[in-house]
Image 1 (cartoon, rainbow, N blue to C red):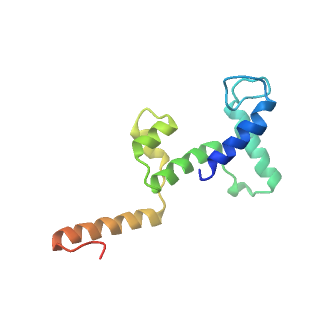
Image 2 (spheres, rainbow, N blue to C red):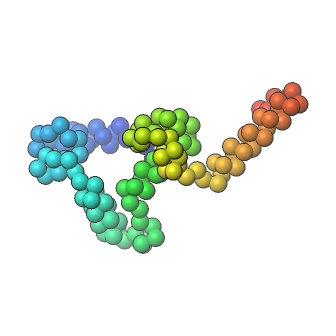
Image 3 (cartoon, rainbow, N blue to C red):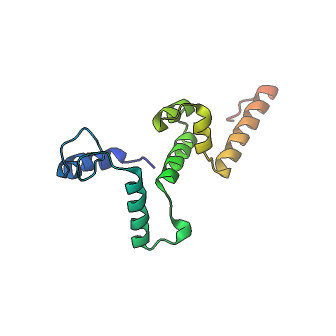
Length: 127
C-alpha cells in the first residue's frame, strides 16, 4: 500500500503544496489551515461516486488506516512500530485495526507447526 509513497509525497511537495498558502501544515486547506477529516472523507466519497464505484466497493479514510495497519503487520513490521505510526496509546488499540487475511493466518500456523516439529525431531524446518 505504501510502495512508491516517497514519489507521491515528492510530487505533492514540489507541485501541489506550493499552490496553497504558506503554513507548517502538510495537508492544508485553501486557507493554509489543517485539512479537516470530514473534508477528506467527503472528497473521497465524491471521487468514488464519480469513478462509478458501487456502494459495496467504497471505502473510507478509516478503512485506509486499517488496511495500512494490516498490510504492514503482514509484511512483518513490528506491532509497536505500527502503534507509533497510527498514533495509538496502546498496542491493544492497534490490534483492533489489524485484520490479517486467512492466508496469512494459515501460513503463520503452518510455520509454527513446522518449527515445533523441527524442535521435537531435531530436523531443520526449512529442509
